Length: 203
Picture 1 (cartoon, rainbow, N blue to C red):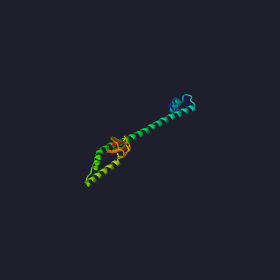
Picture 2: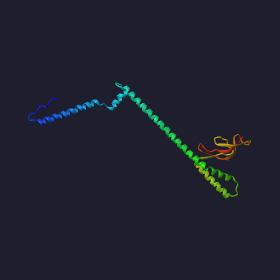
Picture 3: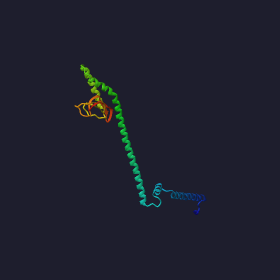
Picture 4: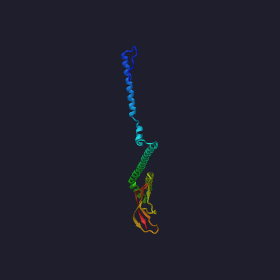
């Protein structure tokens, strides 16, 4: 850069100051130009790296589609895993609730059996019998609200999944594999059998 000509009457100190300012401005412009040429946009670099040097627009579009398909596949897999987790958690929750109910009902079965035996004993005390009947009715209502099913009646068909056959007999008046007598009723909560009915099976 050439030196600026001295104006008539201009002081040497002013001339030196103007030259220093001009030099600093030129240096700043050169630095900015070098920085602009050396730095590239991150997005441009990533696209160039993915598509490769000299990639055509079709290649770039193909790379973008492939990336989109991969992201969509990951999303669908994650969605399926979450759905399976939700269903599994709900199933475990339902099974836990059923198991807790079954365990609770099992504790009341001796009371049910005693009340049933008391009702089967003949008595002349009507007040006593009425009291036992009311107690049994209340217990049955509670069990019903808990979703408990009481099963085991004479004349029903024998089901090994629900009945425990402790005795067999021959009775022409009954059909094959029919409950001839029920010694102890069975209970179940949903599909879970809390107690098998103890029965005698005919034929």
